[in-house]
Image (cartoon, rainbow, N blue to C red; front, side, top):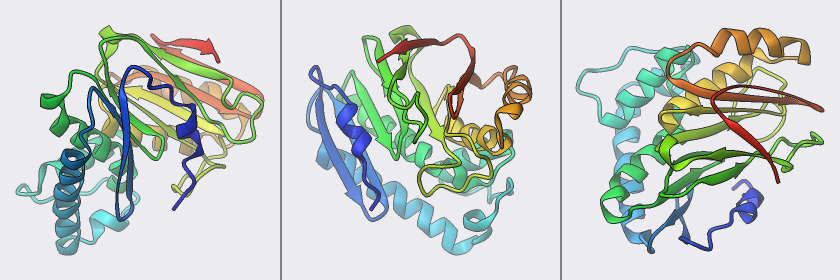
Length: 239
């Protein structure tokens, strides 16, 4: 299991924090109270739905491009396929964000504040502003800047892709590409798509231009070496 050292950065004094791990799914959750049992039940339910569908349609697991799905597919499959179709990536590029979204959705009736992090991909809905630190590998900017998210801009998803860090597939070379979107499943899919385009610092401007006008994207941050670029109605803060 990958070391989740960045979870030590999370300041949750005002919320109850706990983790839930079911096979490959490893979540860090902050809520008004400990909902570990309910969260585990949610993870198991959605993992069963996803795995059962993949057994019938292996293309969903392996494709690096959007795929057509059965109209009777479970909700998590439909959301992943939809996000992938908008971003132009394979549906599994959105799996981490999808679990953040769906577990949060199941827990929301039980807590006013909810943050679900899954491998650095985050769903967030809180009554006060929060700052999300950005980990960018060996870049000098890593852990030194954050994204301030106001309560009125939630719920939203904040997801990061990297061509240098982690096990997720990326064809780019950015230290970090963070996308803020209306949901984590969308942010996850678009983080992969944007990250795939950034192979050097010379690609940053064109990439920003390509994705800045997409309605579902609220903001983008790209870090490569000592360079950073961003777009959207977002607030970058020092940490």
